[in-house]
Image (cartoon, rainbow, N blue to C red; front, side, top):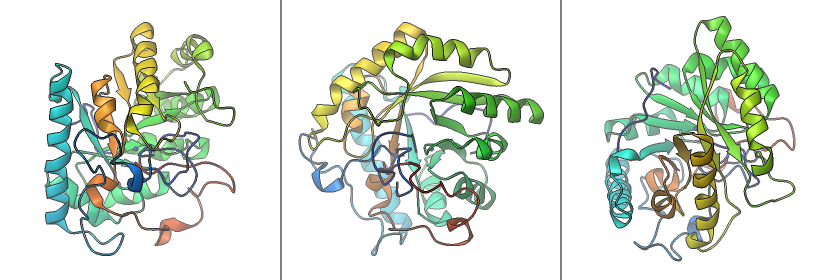
Length: 306
């Protein structure tokens, strides 16, 4: 596995899932694209996907536990890649630190993971200031008024699903003399209330994004419908990979703690993993970033738990 390429130091997608899902841009609770750890072992080729706890109570960080979990996840990625003849170096592990303190980011970086994802722009900004040298990923719901924070951090946005959001990123990037990078979130399960661009609308949406100065679309991201069996997510991952190939997009953000092995088998180049690395996620935001700017409006889905 390789760190995510990009010029910066700085992840949860916006899906129809609860934001508590680790790599998901869902509600304010959690973007890994999070399945319940309790059910994540069903159908997994290697057994339990939740990983060992990297501490005691939820949110307490044990660096040795995080390092052991990183080794376990990278080993499982290598095995999944090997099953389909892929090079594991093609897969970037994005550690989703949603709701965890900066100490969790330091621990995962010390364990060799250079790419870290966040669900809240304000938390990303705070942790980026506390932990330099990280390649940041934003995996929560994209709010236009927070586009500047993400551009300043050089974050790869995994949850672009509106032209208004694309224009906001582009404007802030042009003003900063840089280029904003994003993945388009797609909705391939045809869920009425789910976020994401439908396959039938993707070509027109990409054309609109490519017309935005200061914005580079690098790939697609998907949050499949929740499922107890990781195998149930395979069709969504496969469909997303087909869409990426058809549209000439090289990067695929697919898979979280419960289903990242299936995602790797279907071509993921970025996986959003939180619980399997850090253990149980804290139940609420704490500190100065818990309120005010950066907090999604009531009812707005914001980031999931991978």
